Structures are given as structure tokens and as C-alpha cells.
Length: 249
Image (tube, rainbow, N blue to C red):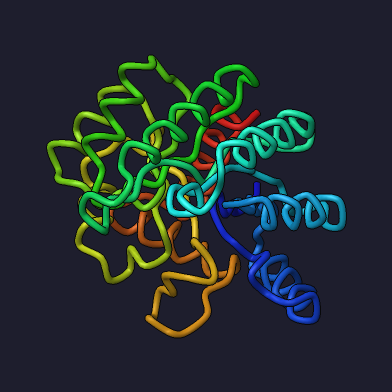
């Protein structure tokens, strides 16, 4: 059994920093790290990481805010790049919608999100969904397109939407800052452990609100799930690994 970080961006660290970060993760018992690309540059960095480190798995995608900076031809070329590397990745992500800035290019974001969904279905890969300030709309599109393999990353929507996601049989990834987040603690309480995964979103969302997060800290997510669910840590570790295998393999 191993700890698994299903969502991070360690490509943001330098080549000099990475070996120590990977070593600290290994010492903490983290055996699988899923790095998520968000654009052409980070998708290629992700590819390099999975070729260099056995611990790292890759997800590739086009992040909604990044999509706004890309021309249609660039988007199509990136989709083809992801398709051509389908056997090297475990998921399509990080993709979705971000309506933080009200009214800004929502139509284009939705169009690209639909393309990412179509790609995930074509390649039979799970989709890792970002849904900031657009939680209900993301769910509507995923339901409309009848997507089954879904992981909602850092879901911050209302609890009624949590119930809707749960009832759809989709997964939630619980970040390490669940330690201080009532939102994520409530999700853990409401959702069966068979639909939970753990993440860090490194280098963001440090569990102790420090500057740089890293995959070793995913253990905090496991510890909090064990505490909230009144389970032994080993039980949580075993079930999360089963969940990972079910969704990603």
C-alpha cells in the first residue's frame, strides 16, 4: 500500500528542487504522484517528469483560464498532442470552468471544456475537473455529456451540489488543507470513502498555510479522513488505493 497524490503541479518547481521533493515524498510513503498539465508548456513538462520518475504519473489538459489565451488552432494542436501521448498518461486534467471573473469568455471556456470531455471519453480516461465559481455549470455539462469517470478537484460548491456529485457516483479529491477547511471536512463527512481520493495541489494549498506545498503532505489528507471517518489510517490508505485503481487504471 502507498499514499497517492492524485493532483499536483510539481512541474512548477525547478529541476534543482525536484529531486529533494520526490525524495521527501518517498520517505513519507507516497508512491504515486499525478502531475497535472494546464497548457502546452506544462503538458510537455509533465511528459518529461513521467519519463524521468517512476513515481510520477501524468495528466494532460487545457486549464480554462489558459484556454482563453489560445487560438483555436493552438487548442486543436494541443488536443492532438495529448491524443498522441494517450498511452503515457492516466487522465485528462486539469480542465473545467473558472468563472472567478464574472462574464469573462464563459462561452469559449465551455466550448473547450466540452472538447476536453470528448477527448477523455474517446481515450477512455478519467477527467480531473476544476470548477471555481462554476460548480453547477460544470456538473450540468458533465451530466449532459453522460461522463462517468469524473474526479472533482478541490470542490468548493454548495453542499447540495456535493450530494449531486455523490449521487452521480463521481469522485472527490480532498486536498491537504482539509486540516483547516470546513468545506472539505464536510465533504469527507457526507461522502462514502469509496468516492474519495487525496491530493495536495502542490505548490498550492499547504495544510499549515505555509508558502510551498509538496506531495509529501498528502498524508495529512489521509489522516484527516481517518479522523473524521473514525477509521484506522491503514484502512484509509487501503481504500484510497482501491479508489485510485478503480478510476485511473
